[in-house]
Image (cartoon, rainbow, N blue to C red):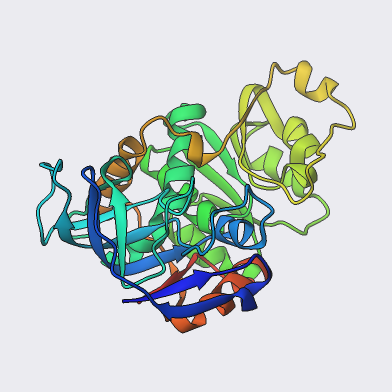
Length: 321
């Protein structure tokens, strides 16, 4: 089979397509014929070695969707021909999904409803599961609460807008002006240009005095901002940053309102199947769709990894073997 391979850590040019043996599933694994594999920033961190180096050679791709080709000897909840999607596979030493076939542990994959698109599902994993885990599990977002989602056009951001809308929260998000109408169609009640000088005032006004839940993907830029626009008892969930040293300039703004902070990684999810089933349910009833900004072939994996970090787009990038 053909697979994207990393033989030494480096830039996007370090990725190449090679012919390799089709893997055999372990007792608790599926062999999946890959229909689509999402492209995520975390894939680039494994590639360049900034995350714990993976054993080389390595095939990237944390997200996967496809059709079960072979089931492991210990598997009884899946059959050959089942449509499935999952996440968390290109991590912890396990080979990823940027290949024609991939082995997937059964604790990281669920059935895909007939009404859900395979390619969208392949791009859904990290983005939608992170959004679900942040808003549903950590923030316990309630109906009618005001929820601020920074960067609504991003992979996690546009999924989070839809997850928040699905629980009937009142969604405020930020993005470039070019994406405002699409984010409003996805369920955002208020969409604001993140570059405006009066952004904090605009968020406070839109929320009637302060937001209840905040999803922050750039803590180094917005940690203090979050405290300033929070309502009393607000919950802030941090999922990332560009610089590893975010800091308050005035932590009194958070203390005076009893603001809670939760920092998270999707890879710490106790059972990935729980949020995956929630995402599948939303996709089945049309409450969540993954916007596919671009699709790539295996030979274009390096370009896809460059683009996921450097380009502006709405939604997700995906590789179709």
